[in-house]
Image 1 (spheres, rainbow, N blue to C red):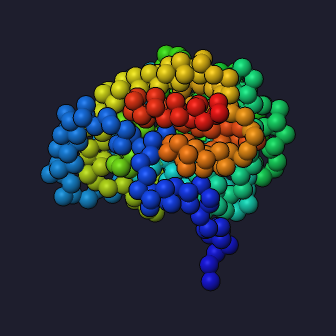
Image 2: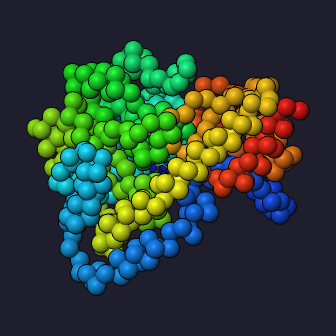
Image 3: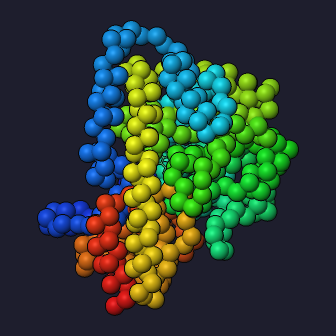
Length: 391
Ligand SMILES: Cc1ncc(COP(=O)(O)O)c(C=O)c1O
């Protein structure tokens, strides 16, 4: 009765089952996986922004329906201004608004791929790709990120992984959860072989504004060396995942970028998924970044420092180098599977962390923790994790 593409294994995994059991038993948990910025104890500092957003959502113009396929120009102008502040000159006409970055991926996969066509994705990375690809009948081909004094792309292996069915390479800049940005040399090399082989770049920049070890990293939104779709939105930029405002910025050699935009506009026009209130409040939502980004950056930096302080006192755990984003990757002894380890940590120490296999790490021995957890909880949670590992 159902499509093959939705034939997912829907049984609950052991880790989720353990979390449910723990919740039913009424156990109090230290959650080091929090990645929802609305649940990170930051809202008290944002009352001004919340009032402004609420006011904008109640704009009398919400009574009017003006179906613009790319999204309302005034909202696209606010996105253009966001990039303008980063000295990236993005034309509002090259932007298409979507409800989420995930929707952006689905439009771009639909634009580029026939059923069975291939898209290269980084490994380890964001666990949603598999479902996004299944839903669009796209075949994902992983390309490895290598760790050697920091994360690097293995460019020869990307070239090897390409076939005549390859339509795009996904870059996550910075990647979740490795926190690695795409380096300039990697960008130049990718532009060169994507341009040559007629393959597009899909660049997910939701964490771009959260660097830990550098000034403003450069966006791909004006990358012209190859056809490029840059995806982002207010869910991370302004800590507003509940508002559902994101976009696709299209750039590249003008002829091909214009054709891509014209086709994307038809896809967007078919759904017209943007609501008027959200678009009218786009500017107020983007303004919230001015308060939430410094607060989140302080938080991620403080937690990283605390992590390093605790790591100096022990020998069982190290952390991998991180350049940006909201996560840290821990290297731990692979004496049991990561799944067994996180279940033990939950049952014995009431602390929740993610196993590396959620993100497709190549082996056991990796844990992922969020750096946006409130400082006192992060401190105590890490103390428990390290204490368990030492014993
Ligand atoms: C790398 C990456 N891209 C996209 C998203 C989802 O963004 P959105 O809420 O805009 O769909 C996430 C969510 O955590 C993410 O980690």
